[in-house]
Amino acid sequence: MGRAVTADFASRGAMEKRRLAGTLAIEPDTEVVAVMVRDHVTNVTGVLRVCHGVDGVVNTAEPIRTTGYSAYDQRLADEIKRTWKFSSFLVSGSPAPMCSPVTFVYSVPPAQT
Image (tube, rainbow, N blue to C red; front, top):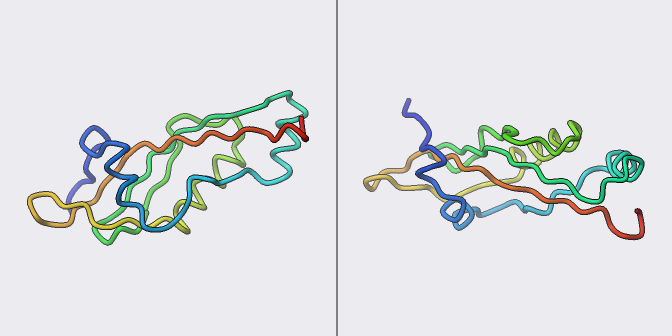
């Protein structure tokens, strides 16, 4: 089996252009938001390394930079693997697996802070 194309090769823009399904708007559950409010946190940023196979199905979504809330990190990974799909990335005319970092930013709505 071939190796995944590295994030250096698959720029963030290249991967985003090929996303057919799924959204970047993945919110934490209400319990995590409540903890953020308790912690006086107004926004968090996390980065996940997302990889898909030649079929465009995501097979890996792992935190590179955590949001600081493990339940939210897990929700991001689970939702990406469950809902995201990509068109094939071609290398020399053949479908190839691809990986790229994806950044997520969540801001607690003002009414909750």
